[in-house]
Image (cartoon, rainbow, N blue to C red; front, side):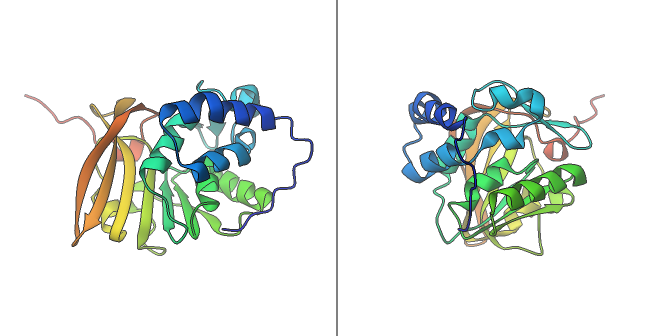
Length: 230
């Protein structure tokens, strides 16, 4: 866990504190380390300029690479991290990492974290953000979401940042024994709502545990097309 923040007279510090007190803590996020990361990491640098004023609300905010991408609301992300029981020794992967906010949160909680995104422009944004924040244990890679990051596997923790409706087999296969994968399982292909779910790998098999109802943008690559019906 290595970082150096060089922000003085931070105009967003009060907004982050309000976010933690009014959104994060009231959504059953009792993990003090997660709360502290939410207070510390400057979410405003991960969103497009037009959304900076909304960076610490639960409103829809975007970051743009080759195309625009919606970021998961802070309270949902914080609750997922809390339920994943993050450890300092974890090797973590964020799938659908976009401009790197979720990975930046994890960088202060785990040994190392990889942010994976299919959009090379967003992956480059994440890399620049990690460098700006001095996050030496965070790296960004571009590649197919479904394939995960086999070169860096196995992982103790995988966060799939968004709503999915399938296609998790390869990612679960990249979990270490005892590893956890947390994501939101959608109600239907392309859904924006579903059940945040924690998968744990034991004896080579993964078993799911439902956590809480949640909403976020769908992860396109992990949304199988609807089956043809005669």
